[in-house]
Amino acid sequence: MGIVEEAHNVRIVGKGNQTVILAHGFGTDQSVWKHLVPHLVDDYRVILYDNMGAGTTNPEYFDFERYYTIDGFVYDLLAILQELQVQSCTFVGHSLSAMVGLLASISHPHLFTKLILVSASPRFLNDSEYFGGFQQEDLTQFYDGIRSNYKAWCSGFAPLVIGGDMDSVAVQEFSRTLFNMRPDIALSLAQTIFQFDMRPILGRVTVPCHIIQSTKDLAAPVVVAEYLQQNLGGKTIVEVMPTEGHLPQLSAPDVVIPVLLNHIRHDLAETK
Image (cartoon, rainbow, N blue to C red; front, side, top):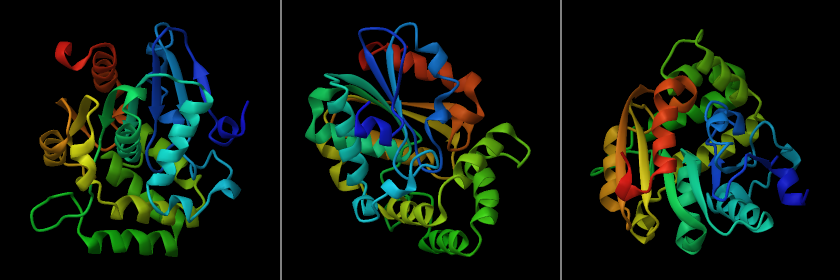
């Protein structure tokens, strides 16, 4: 196993001629795809990895300067694809990783047959002509909460993002992976993610994009999915699911897994 594979806990499962990459978002790790993977392994070569900063990665490898912008994650993804000699893939990216996939596809479009964007947002902050879901005061409170009492912040943030009470399995699972992160790394990544603005690059994306969205998502409202569809440079399709929360693949797998499988198996023109 190479250095990149080891650092990102790269796991390859399944068999097939086509490769599917599963990439997670903030506060989770590759386990967020646990309900989807068993449905893919008979037909696809599936590659999973952990983003640097996830609780499952070595915090000593986390370079605060490298991950001050989202570009650090893009370089990581491209390094993984190069080390594993991936010639083309279907990329499934959740939240942060949806934007990582978009950016990587601009510089290396030949590596991606399509991008499946789950709970994606190019900008979380509202401005005068754009609704991203958050005001700056909301984010400042988030950052203050992480600094003052990380465990308490995790306990409050998890049900807010999942859209359930603390007793739900999905909330407990997200709380666990969130709390596994080192607090200073979590703060740095939260600031990187919640303050980024990917809107200017959307028109440069030419790879087909399948946008998968919950009906109710505090972090990525439906209007954001519509904004993506209107502004991405290539062909797009949006599917809004009757689910709640930002991690529907964890909180409502019975609904989400068939939707994801449909978009993985069918190209944009033939998606059912």
